[in-house]
Amino acid sequence: MKIFCFYFLMLCVQLGFAQKTFIFPKIKTQGTSVEQFTPANWTAIDQADGDLNKDGSADLAVIFEYHKTINETRVYGDNNSAIIKETQKPRILAIFFKDRSTGAYHLSTQNNDFILRSEEGGKLGDPLQQIVIKDQQLYLRFQGGSEWRWELGYTFKFENKDWFLTSAINLYFNQNTGDMTERVYDFKTRELFTTVGNLHRRDIANRKTSEVLYFSQLRTFKTFKKPWAWEIMPNVYL
Image 1: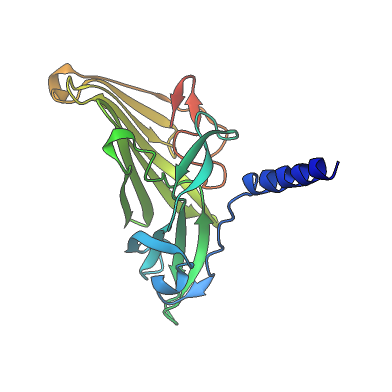
Image 2: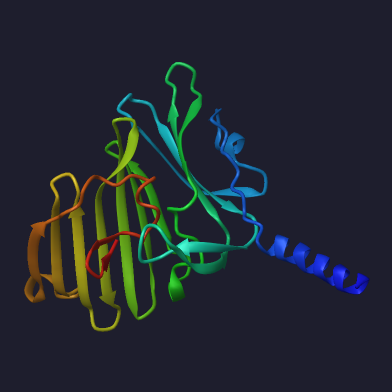
């Protein structure tokens, strides 16, 4: 009986460790440099500077990456269910506004899900391509795949005290044949522009259409969890 109790206790301990959830650090709310905001065991792997709130000062967006791989359960196919387990390094997106009078940065938002991880790009490797601040907007670009490749672009803008997705682009193409489908989304005007044809012969082989986008409200970092998590129309994911 004692042996049974011992093994039962060990099993419970193992299950407890197995079910332990990774805890993301909370980024400091105020500081003067990227180094001050970087949590222990994390590295700033990319950043962008520029005015995001129309006050004329250079605000800051930073992507941090954890120093080792963990098991993450990630969303694909809808915005609610975490359905695929990945072994990879977590990433954090942090956006800061700069105080013109003091020069200090103040945290506007921290997002632990939206930035694709290094293992989520397929054979092309790390899908993170670009983070840019331009025209008071934040641009994020990703790409991945193998023979069939994809490119994703998202534009967020700070309005009414929140970060709204204002536009997006999704390009899916065959590297060898050039066959492609490109969708450009304008969420402000609720328009979708679709181009189907060939990437190498855009002027003569492509068919372009436009249609109305139907959605209840603009998505934010809180309501659009990550790439590939919004089924914006049947069998079309953004």
